[in-house]
Image (cartoon, rainbow, N blue to C red; front, side):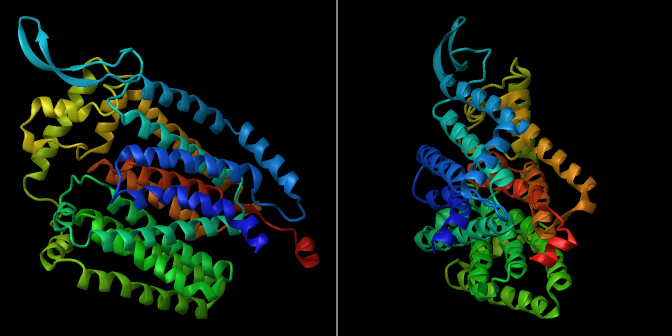
Length: 459
């Protein structure tokens, strides 16, 4: 048991860190989520330092030194530290708010700038959730890049999917009587992006099943099936129709690629067991949709089957929100943005109350309007750095081997979330962002050196 904990404790803490917002969203607001992410990040850092994965023949002290050196010397770590300072400045440089005051020769509503207008700013407590999310991202990426071995990486993907499945079933049971909340998820501007997050974990659950055959954990097949079924239940219950359509299509593609990999590496017997697990997993969402979701809501969620993704007024309202975001960005805030959380204030100042939203249906424009080019760089540069690492390892593929379903998962999740960002702001939420970059880091790190034939014979 001690060996099990020493091998997988870090993976378990990383999984809890990624899934924590999904356990909290039915009960608490973003301030509580920010506090939990900070504490979970601290615990994960302790496990990162104390119990990293050990290589063959390596003592714990040697593993600790190796991981610390590789983290500190990683250029991406320096980039994260720089962006952490910017996020810290934005958190404390608040003051952006909507006020009614005498301006010029009349009384009117207007948006005040942050305390130091030329620095990145924020409105209310919006800066705290961004800071805690960025810390969680930094810890997750560095741990996945340097401190997890092959088994630990697969365990991380599996445990995050399993915890997400538990969070989904718990939230569905607690909120099953809240018809308004379930109805709100049929709109494409939801108050929570839990549906998108469950979509991300439903994709990871498929790959974790392929990892089960890779590591010969066949006795745990029912747990892996539960992870798949529970995550997909969360996607269908809390996701809007387009979200369900996007992640279902991507899920089918991942099932095909993972099944092919299982057949090639483990034989036809494992291939058929793979689909048996999927059949068992399908029972859970079928039962949830049959007994816990009103039939009229289910009909609305199935709209993607008719390729009727958006209602007729969606594109018109989307263009209005995007136009407001463009005006904010161009109004002297091109580099630092208008302030984190400022866009809802501008919407309140420009539109009728029934059109007020917290997040507009285009996450990329909301990102650049509130955070400017600096905020965009905080998102893009770490991802580009990891993709550059991926490209370097592809060049060396003759001397490396990879668990390809994990590699495909990282790239697929990133692409899906980026495309989804054209239609909602899920990519800005901690429940989606932390897991997305963690899976990308795990995928890029899923390359290992091929063993020399003599070493293999000796072992």
